[in-house]
Length: 409
Image 1 (cartoon, one colour):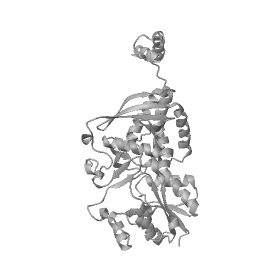
Image 2 (tube, helix red, strand yellow):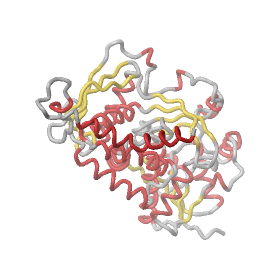
Image 3 (spheres, helix red, strand yellow):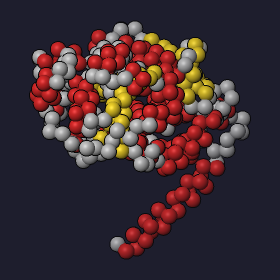
Image 4 (spheres, helix red, strand yellow):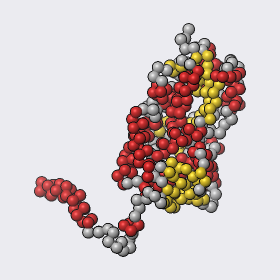
């Protein structure tokens, strides 16, 4: 008999987590609390409530939470203040959602006096690491049930057989036509894995993409948008201020229409294997380009370079599940300090998969001085003779080394 009396399950209502719900009831004989997060995935979430009720979950133990604003405001935007990119390409759309889900799982365990949390991440993936590192950081004594590391239902066929045996409703996409893509969606992105994407040489099917048209099918007319930033965060599009999640949703729509934000990537997973996935991140792609543009005129050169040096470390911390770690929090404090002066607007042109910066300005914090940078007469603002001494001093060590080499040789 298990000593776990109540477990909080991260529950989507799909095949995997529906099987897990029943498996928890049978294997651990515990009370189950379900938690379903609305992160802007665009799916109807009420069916998850109906399925949970069908399996005897008490209404007060069903949590369906709208986390869209918290997700963008407190996780996505802080990440983009660092211009975060993993392995040169990936904008971390899945990774950045996991610490929020872990936080809410722990919140609900505290609200319901639960003993454990449970999740549907497989033993091959990164999400098991992200969920559990976050949970342990926030509640060190929490117990974790990871069914994919315990059961023998390690194939789609076995899951379907278990579902049929226990009367678990199965959508038609699981019954016919081969395995569906494994998808993760939130306001920042959609990811796709599985099917023929497991062959890294195979091009993704055009029908797979949900948010973006192909660049070939995008409008022939470019579209311009003005993005306004305050302390490093987007606050308005074309002068219209909106909540954080509404801003990102609007960027997704604009970018998707112009074929922006598709990515085909083979990444190095935390657990040691290489994994091929395809991603749609239209709004994030625009936001990253625009944020770097406003930083280009508002950040000191060495501060900007320091941020670029630190960014890969920061990206790895998020990818590997260390959002709640002291080192990520410390880096965030430094990054946020640099953003106090990142205020102004950026004009972006969207055209057939391209995000093109066409202008930027900051009335209060621009370090761009046209009287110094000009190619015309600068009226003495810059003394070009100063460059000679600077060059000679920086060349001195190389001249000494070259002289030594010539004497030796």
